Image 1 (cartoon, rainbow, N blue to C red):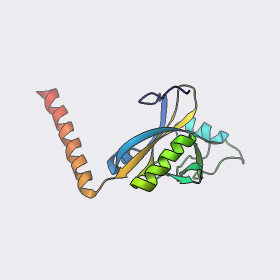
Image 2 (spheres, rainbow, N blue to C red):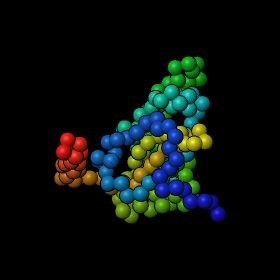
Image 3 (cartoon, rainbow, N blue to C red):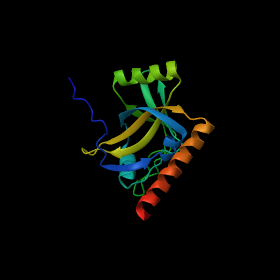
Length: 159
């Protein structure tokens, strides 16, 4: 039996982060997925380049794909460089794929990538979240909460 994953994944080097996702969605559950990459994509990510701001994950049959993520061409690559916005396969267990599929179909949730990072073993990973979209009033409430916490911090420092 496989050992359970830690509550928060061992993030060594975060390459790309989708900060907007936490503002636009309520995060229900998190998953860690491997990322099927070609060599020049890994090298570009190791240089700290990449963006998942407008990306999302979709389930196609028994496979999960990361759509619209941007990994720029590797600067020292040759004519065999990769496509910058190609669909990239996410590596999940069958059980995790079934859980995602069920949540999307039954509860109407969305699969959103939160970050791309390299773990302690040097493997590229994606942190995925099952998320529910926020309405406009929820977003306003989030802004109020964030501003209040910032103000509290200021008052405590200067108090």
